[in-house]
Length: 108
Image 1 (tube, rainbow, N blue to C red):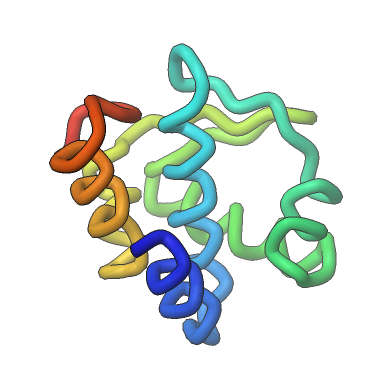
Image 2: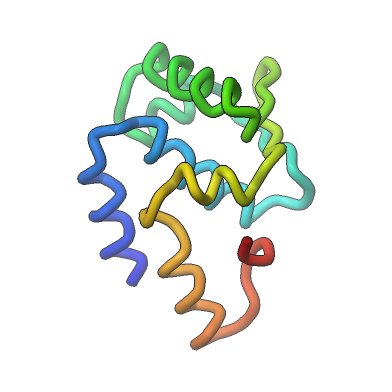
């Protein structure tokens, strides 16, 4: 399920959709809403340029889903971020919860 979700997400040509999914996956794995991460690292993880990540972050921040500071991203509106990720996020996480154990943040 996770491999299929990854493949589907990578087919999206919109970086803001892929970034929203990736931020949600990070958010599932940290305590709180702050993710300490650089634009450079996000660019490496998403296979793109840092400047493209900065532009995609501005899109999400402009929609008030996140707040960025130097070296960190705060998730402000998780339900809207899940919507921004479209159908690239949620299926694998729900399947994990169903088959194994509770995981991540509560679904929107």
